[in-house]
Image 1: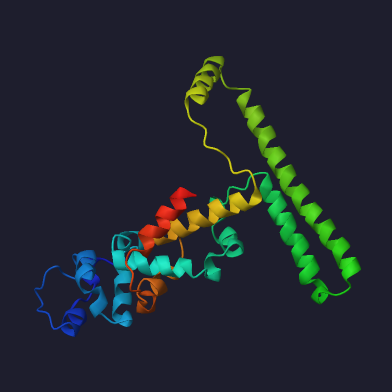
Image 2 (image 1 turned 90 degrees about the vertical axis):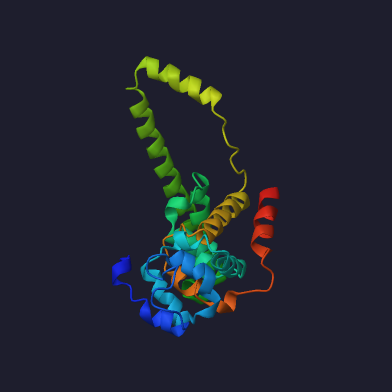
Length: 232
């Protein structure tokens, strides 16, 4: 990220017919400046602020959050289940069920895309076979992780075991989603929330944050969406 000293604020102030000593300064207090003048600046000028602000910092601006909200609410392919799992695999918590997901993807690919989806009788068998292989590979990976964890636990001193048990008994255990649909829903909700609050690693922010086509008339949409999600 560029330093305020290297940020040329003169063209921005000139565009708005503001004096050189105007405060808040676009260079020294960019968020405060955007709070006042975001709607007055053209997108090509606003993009300059990407060099001195982070997506997380810009999330304090209601106008920016609302643009992000309307973007995710449009179900863009960049935040779809398939794209999101590949882009942010560290946020996917399918655990054992992940093998089922990957297996289904292998099966769908074979049935719909392999050889153009033709020769259905053979492709159907191939899809089931590939799906089974992928699911078994993921299941074996999970078993291997558990074996390694079990071997590690053998070397934990007895007093540590007791303290761990006490902590485990007192600490609340969050309910685990039961179905694949629930797992996917929780994952997509996490992706959307993290995007809105500037916590994802993606270039999408530079296009969404400064795009006034995502402006709407109802400023309460974002708050209502989160309230509805919390009730689910």
